[in-house]
Image (tube, rainbow, N blue to C red; front, side, top):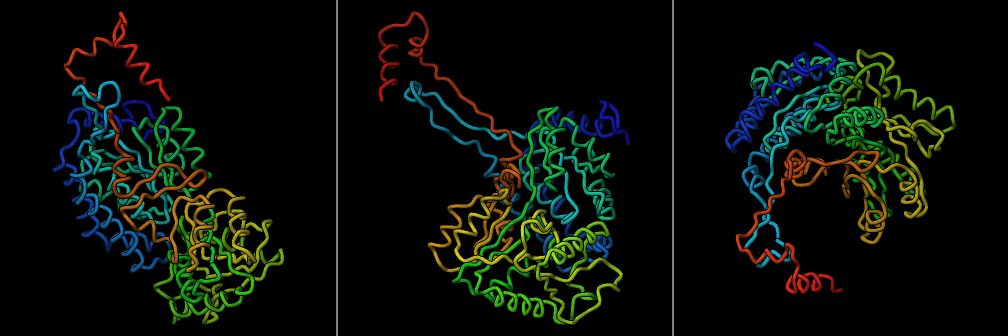
Length: 478
């Protein structure tokens, strides 16, 4: 496929074809939008097993039960939610008419217009979910779509390309596969909107490329999402939920709890609770357990192992949660057991980079205000988690920190609420989607004002008289 983006060739030809179809057909009817949503639901329900097999192949090993939950059922849920509410979302919204026209029969409203063609760049960690979940908003808003999935999950990307071609015409949805060179050129195309989900480091390049065409962006990034365990937290319940989030997809989640603040006198209690949580979730061990997912490839395996060795070399206490004392040096995949790093220092790589793996640094604190100050001294995260029953402490944390979203007394779950927007802030992203917020993100909010036929408005035109001056003077009062 041609890479230069020249009209009439390669990816640009695909985009031009979709744009032409959008102009030819106009805004799709509700029936057409429902049809597009239904096709994706059917695709996932019919081919879920094949997609799960492809993800397992790409990861070396990936829990199929996890894939069914996060990628198949999770995506279908988002699509069904959009299908249920699309008719209501599409309705124009009346707005109040202000002076001096409000008394004269004029009207103001918003109409939600499809933007046109949306470019979706999806990542490798949830390759199906983070391709199909955005489509709920894209289709409900009446858009067409070009998709660039990750080259790291090659089997899944190729299968999605085949399946989309089976269910949709190239004027509706098309998938472009390939490596970083294809991805770079994809971001240079003059889409009507781009959604990028991935690393903050790559987002800089995406934003620069989009700027050349003034393409609006939604950036779903990540960062180091912190956990604060208050003194009132149920330690075992909190540790079980935190470790469930940390081991889901082997921690390869943008919203994974990245590090945890634990009261200083309860650190050992947390270690014990985390150990029991792993023993409960993986009673037969980890290495050959179908429920425990592998790190996606050698590169990321080496990166995560490097964090552990760097922390150990710099003096941190490293605790491997390996209940059956299995030898992970001998395995066909890239599994890494859950690992706690106790009281890491900021010069350790594990506290500098988003971990994206099954490592949990545990920082001790004396006062919740110190934990809040630490969080605020670092880039704003995608997620933040508080455990405890102390309402005042919870308010302290929530009112004095800024993050994309929050889950209280659990981790990650706010992303599963379709009626809540999902998005980051600053370094963790911009814009938000899911549910109605996804519909709005991929719609143009067209302001429409309809003037009254009453010619009393003639006083607003020269020559200005006393009535005009009285109206203006009235508006100038404090």
